[in-house]
Image (cartoon, rainbow, N blue to C red; front, side, top):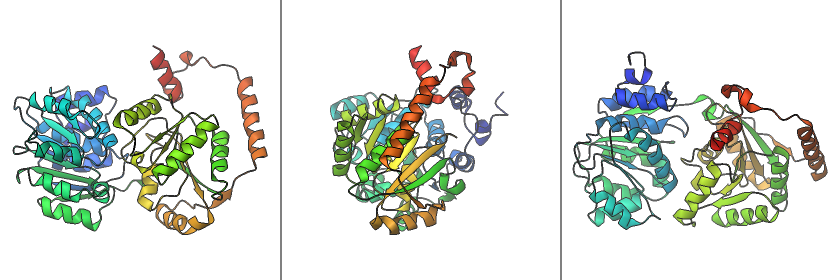
Length: 416
């Protein structure tokens, strides 16, 4: 019955194929098609792949199939740079784990370490961790990696950018040389290559280039402004575009706090996400954003890597990013799963070189435009409200599910 299933043909077990089907996943992405067969055969792999290409399932599926649930020790380890990404990968892994009764520990800072120690004593098959907390457990001798079969380094470039090289080296030396190693990275820098050469065995090199750098479903707009007028321009954009969910990216934590405070004072439904927040606060903010209780998330680049929230209609770069990869990761938070999204970048005269650099890479003809006056924006907004109030209420219960707007369908499910 599975012979016609694309994932089964790649070498994935019947049990996991069933879980994928229940979650509506039947067709592999390009990176899954290219990498999974070699991963199933035990090959080390270095894969260059942008966020949103399906890389999480690429390493989770073969790793899960290799775990033997009757052997009560750590067989799989996934290392990731941020807590948010660790949480996201853990959520995906738990969906698959029910097929084989695999026990999982997510180990990252901000959580009660004693609770993690207690769970480790009960027997864990798969650990998903950030480098700092993982090293803490290793030094306390809570975690033993001597029998590890599979190691995943996810977002390797970001881990190196964040200064985790020494931590990664210390962790990898605790694992057996016979392990299978999978390295995934949005960019393959010289540092990433050196890491692969040192710790991997003749790895297969895979590079997945999505059409137009994964940005085909995203309308990109550049708005001219000045530092003095930036906040007013941001508010005009929000009023004019009326996003369902929006992420506003700033370069620093201080700026995130400042902009969120400004938005709240003007009555917008916003909150902030940055590295100084407690883990409980970060999780609460993301929960509210995912459930659309929160409309605008003001964030540093910590939110650009690994955060996949359905329904983000707009990304606004309040500060232009420092490099092209950060730009791609930021605006990739919208236009997900075939939906159309909009990315707006605010630029001041001093940003011209950064904008030109980004434009050369993404080839999107990023020409700055001037924002309309406040009065014009106000009239447009009022006109939209009038048209909206005159529309008849649509009974979406009589509309086929596939034709309903996503947020309407999601609200309908919550009300059941």
